[in-house]
Picture 1 (tube, rainbow, N blue to C red):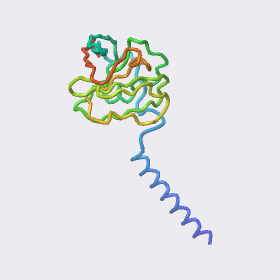
Picture 2 (picture 1 turned 90 degrees about the vertical axis):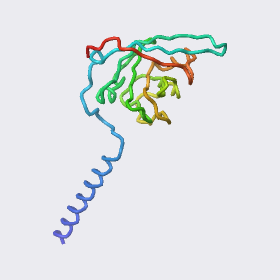
Picture 3 (picture 1 turned 180 degrees about the horizontal axis):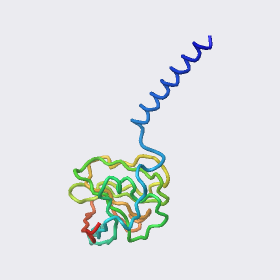
Picture 4 (picture 1 turned 45 degrees about the horizontal axis):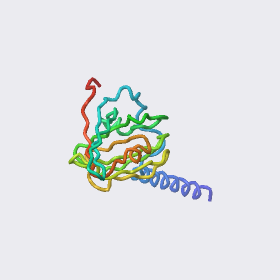
Length: 175
């Protein structure tokens, strides 16, 4: 009898291990980041502008100094571990080619507004005040060419809206 129980236990452990490997392959990543966190000072910088037209069709131009998440590692890190973000700062995630983008707030300590920018450079969706420290999926719902993250509440404070024009230029290309 002990020999039968031992074989059964071995098979059960093998099945559980195989099941766990399959689930890990299809589940969204969680836990530790796959690469060590980079200092944001190593990210390239850009000057980002949002052109907003109010109800009276008056133009308002808002300027932000943003970090550029231009590699898979930088995009994975994003603004994780940042504990404060000035009103005029943020991050842009360029997406080439445009695609439906899904993001989360894992290890992100502050609320963020996410501006999903289509291939024409227009805001196609705004996700305001994304909740910190969650794995909730935040989707663009349609293909976008960039995502801009700003301090939570900035989009409402500035009355940014779908259709506003977003552009950026490299501030330093040395990284």
